[in-house]
Amino acid sequence: MGLLPALTDLVLPRTCAGCGLPGHVLCPACAVLLTVPHLAQPRRFPAGLPPTVAAGAYAGPLRPVVNAFKEHGRAELARPLGAALALAVAAVRAGVPGTGRPVVLVPVPATRAALAERGRDHVRELADRAAVELRAAGLDARARCLLRRRGRPRDSAGLTAAQRRANLAGTFVADPADDRPPAGALTVLVDDVVTTGATLCAAAEVLSAAVVTAGRPVLAAVLAATPRPSGRPSGPSRYRVRNVPAGHHDRLSGPGRSD
Ligand SMILES: [Zn+2]
Image 1 (cartoon, rainbow, N blue to C red):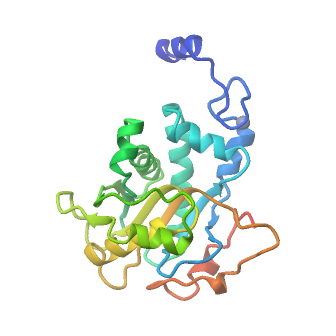
Image 2 (tube, rainbow, N blue to C red):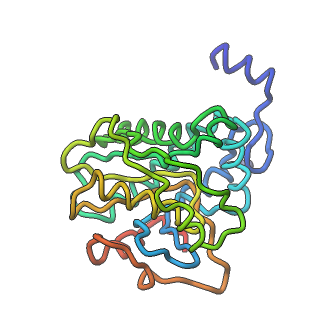
């Protein structure tokens, strides 16, 4: 152990962000909960939701893990969470043809208020870290901030899915200042958590129109998806997406799927 990590441990004893177990940033039992990539299945699929793979379920110990990184500044979680996001990206990428194509990760931009409050862009940090992990695995991957926020949507707390979508309409614009993705790249929106899918829908719509030409679908990957209420299973046949080859969702149901 280097001097700096040793000193950090003296000042800030490590405890698992999920369960509080001493000695780990993220203990093995909690980390494994982020290794079950599965299709996110919001309770009501919004039209235009890109195929979205989550590394785990936003439930149990993963809720405090995500919130520790997002809201409480536990930046040391960037590495394990970036690796989890990379796993979700790899899973969603495996569902479409052309696996040799470069992968461009596009973080869903935070609101100005959220950036000011947190003092950092945690989704961009995740995207950067996931790109590092994917490159280490031999993929041509990079993170690019191709979207930015416009205007100020209302706080979405308490809104229905339809109200959230209306609230988000026009929220995102393509950022002309950033580098364009390489020709033929696979574009993957990335975010921390998906609940209704409204944010991903709005972001994918803008990205599809501005950056990605027809025939190259926008995909999405997140750390965690809010699980559907038990007893209300949703099959892939209920999934409604545009520009996705038939069979895409079946091909994602391979090893590692949690349900
Ligand atoms: Zn734990």
